[in-house]
Structures are given as C-alpha cells and as structure tokens.
Image 1 (cartoon, rainbow, N blue to C red):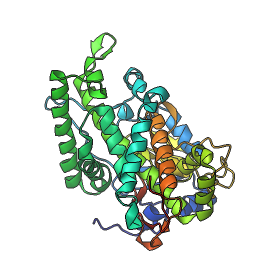
Image 2 (cartoon, rainbow, N blue to C red):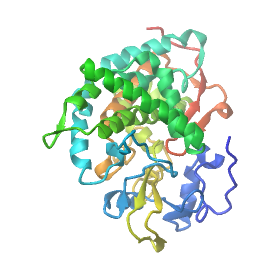
Image 3 (cartoon, rainbow, N blue to C red):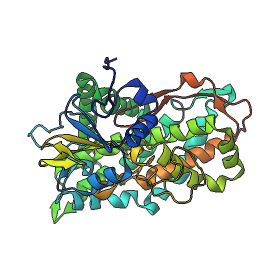
Length: 405
C-alpha cells in the first residue's frame, strides 16, 4: 500500500487518496465550499485543481476548447498505444471533431430500447447470485453481488465469456483503482486488457456475431472503416467503464439501505419508488470523477492555470452543492427535483447511463424481493475504494429473514 502524506490544508494541498477522503469526502467538500474555495489545488503528482461546486464542474465540462479530454485519469498515467505507435482512443478521451461521429456510432447499443433486452437476463442473474448466499444469512454483498452483475452484462454486449467475470473485475480494479497509485500494477493489468481484446477482435474478424465488437468491425465513419485504434480503445472502455462504475453504484445504494432501515422498508412497501430512489442514490453517492487538461493558460476563480495542468471533474462534489440541491447532504429517496450530474455533463456525458440505471434498478428490486430485511454486520468492516471511482469494496451484511425465490 502506497504511503500517503497527511493533508494539512485541503484548499492548497488536497490528496484524493487520503484515507479520510476516500472513506467520506463529503465533509471535506462542504468545508471547502463553506470557506469560499470553489477550486482547491494540489501539486501532488501534478498540479491539479478540484472544483467543489456544481457550477464550477459544469462550466469546465462545457468548455471543451479550454479543457481537453485527452487524459481523463485523475492522476497522470501513460496512454495506451498499439504496435505501430497509434494511440488507442475511446469516446471518453477524444476531443472534437473526432468525438461526435465516434460517439454517435456507439449510442445505438446503449439506447433505452437496446438496453431493455438485457433486463430479463439481469433479473435472472441477480436471483441466481442471491440464491448462492441466501441460506447463509450473511454475505459480503459488494463482493458477491454488486461486483458480479456488471461484468456479466457487459460480457453479453461485447460477446465475451461471462464466466470470466472475476477475471474482468480483477483486471479493471488493477488498472483503474490500484494502478492509479502503482504504475507497475496498472501496466500489468492494462496490458492484459489490451491483449485480451486483440484476441477477441481477431476472433470476430473470422467469426462475426451479434455483439458490439462485430458491429464496430463492420461499421464505417464518413464512408471509411472505423480505425482499429478506435475499435480497440472503445471495446476496452466498455469493459473498464462498464464494470467499476456500476459495481460501485449498486454497492453504495445497498450500503445506504443496509444502514437506513426506514428507507429500505419504504422501498419494500413501495417498489414503484425504486427508480426515483435510484436517481437519489446516484446523486448522493456519485461514483465517478473524471479529469480534463488545460489546452492554454487560463484562470479558475482567480487561480492561474497553466497549459497542461489537470482539473478533476468532481461530479460527486457537484451533486452535494446546496446552491443546486435542497438539503444536499440528506438522502431523500422520493426527491422530485434531481438534476444531478452523476453521469457527467456536456458532450462526454456517459453513453452507458441507460444501462447503468437498468442494472441498478433491477439489482435493488431483486435484492429487496428476496432479502427485504438486512443490515450491516459491522459498520467498521465496510471498506471503500476511491480516486477515479468511489464505492464499497467490502460490504458485509446479515439478513435473518429472507424469501427464497
């Protein structure tokens, strides 16, 4: 485990891997806002800025001329290249003018109607997972439930083996979570992902199917085949972005329900409220922080920013801003006005938001049907991951009363 130097001044020397921040960042963002600090600053790893307000995050996301998406990691990491020196690029890390046609290519796979065809599969998967531990009366539902759902759904979309779900989550955790503080770990797992998809792409060239990889190989942009670095970059993105984020969102929602019995019981009694509650869980426990790079010297609320410096789009902080949300620190599962930015803002808003919502809704609904009563086995045993994606990694619960289905 990398040693983290303690923080004495969050406004001028913040540290996103500080254990206090990983476990509970919300009081820190609140203190920064209350002290009149809309943009915190640090020189750890690289000069980086951290907005604490909804307006600050949205303004940066909207200004794609000043802020490039070339590097979206919250820490500086090497880019991935193919053997010919071409950068593997995905829609999440592409600027205009390439971004629009490449994003448009992906959207049909994640439209509401396209996502719905995976609902029944997701329901059956959730029930199967729950049956594996329901008789025990206890489980780590971050590990044995939330973690297990997204890789199998993404596998169906990509046409890859769902039985390798544990491999996929290990690779993603290594490259996106542990690897942010350890470049050796990151490169190890990033290479595994790159090589895996090289093999999958080669297989689809010989044996095309009804999946996203086959679709991209057959698609065109402006009358030309989709460049191979774009295909490789985007199928890798689907695995990385589609697993850790939804795993974290499902886990955070279940953590809340395990620790707030009144909300849990209300959703059991009023399951029709689950979609509204999901939006509130997304707002209150937004998992993702992205980054942008300054394309020129600029200013942020009086702070001078140099070309090449980094800013984090702290969507979780934006979603707790009292200027935008009434009682933002309170989780109100029937909140009606909820224009959160959990899925981002601007041209890079998450293309997979419909899929993530469906998975969250189904995961919560099926869990509450089969296990209507559950609570934390030990609040101190819950652990959280932070950095690029925040969510519970160990979430032990007990459930004396359950319903077998």
